[in-house]
Image 1 (cartoon, protein in one colour):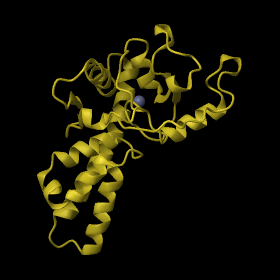
Image 2: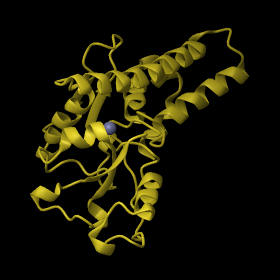
Image 3: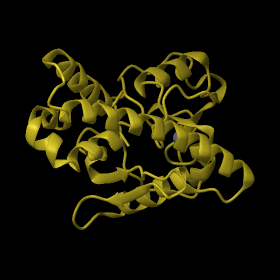
Length: 223
Ligand SMILES: [Zn+2]
């Protein structure tokens, strides 16, 4: 999960005829969430849906700007109205990517690891861990098996990029120019606008070679 800043300006059209899926609203949400699903962090979502953070069935505002999030259809259907009291990635008082650890396993069939990363996690963290665990790992129907496979393939491809880039940094014969370039790749991957950025944050933190040799990347995590 990654933090975003919600623009204060409410898109025109929101609320007209009680509709929330007007083009301007969708456009504003897409920009705000960098085109990423706020739950699974896939980028360039092809099947975007407007997600009500507090489900309408649970009293969430249908056309309330603060209640509208950008998600993929898989995550929206998994969340449905079953999950309330979640971490709010639009709240800049909470570093959501630090609160939940995400690790892509090296074998795609195994479950992605999703766990609370803070001592004494509150209900919001616990509920969000449960939901994200489902978003990444649920394959309880044939269709969810297929959508999970495509999601995992995307994370896996980026994991390979991360590991190859690390290899360049580790190789003593890599030129300074290429080293700089490689560092730029990791930096880019760890920024919130990159797909699955929370994974790359934890991939970096779990690698003492990278943390010891390139501590400057730590600054990105506290920006
Ligand atoms: Zn998603």
